Amino acid sequence: MRNIDLSRLDQRTALLLIDLQNDFCHPEGTSSKRGKDVLAFQEIFQAITLLQKTARKQKIPVIHVISEHSVWSESPSKTERFGRKNQQIEQTYCEPGS
Image (cartoon, rainbow, N blue to C red):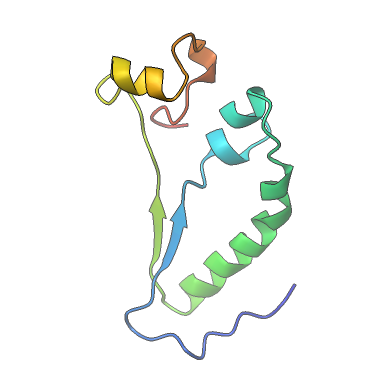
């Protein structure tokens, strides 16, 4: 694994980790249950973990951005648009706590 060069970072730097959620990345997550290959994520997970640990050690803010969907954020048009009209409940994405 390569070393991480932090020499060009300044006080405006932050690490953004977006949608690193079990539903998208874990072999037992919804994406995998729907037939998506999540092995690519598993291969880069060590690099992401090293990057996160290095950022924290250097006091660089680490910001996790996630999506959560619930009955409050669902609508018939959104369900139709994303092809989830006949979606089974165990295959929903981004449930709170997932």
